[in-house]
Length: 106
Image 1 (cartoon, one colour):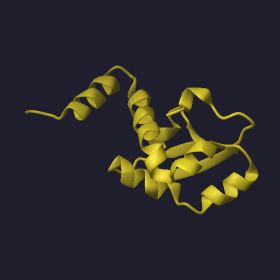
Image 2: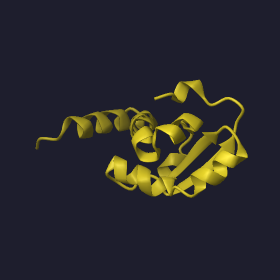
Image 3: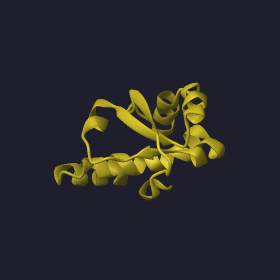
Image 4: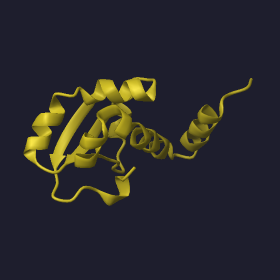
C-alpha cells in the first residue's frame, strides 16, 4: 500500500518516539496563517517536551495579559485545526512571558 510522504514521515517519527517533533513542526507551520501576522508576532506556540499535546493541549506564550484577552476571542483551536486539516488542538492555554520563546519562531 502506498502512503503519502507526510504520512510516511509521521509514522517514521512516531515509531522512533519523536511524534512531538512532527506535531510541533505542523503547529508552527500553521500558526501564522491560523492567527494572522500581527497576532503571530505577539504570541508563539510553546513546544514543550511534554505529551500533553497528545490530549490536544497547546500552550501559547504571549507578551502581556492584554494579548491573552485579545487572542482568547480568536478561537485559536478551531483556526489551527482548520489549517492543519485535522482536529489536533482541543484546549489552548495562554502564558504571559516577557520574552517569547526563540526556538519557536516560524
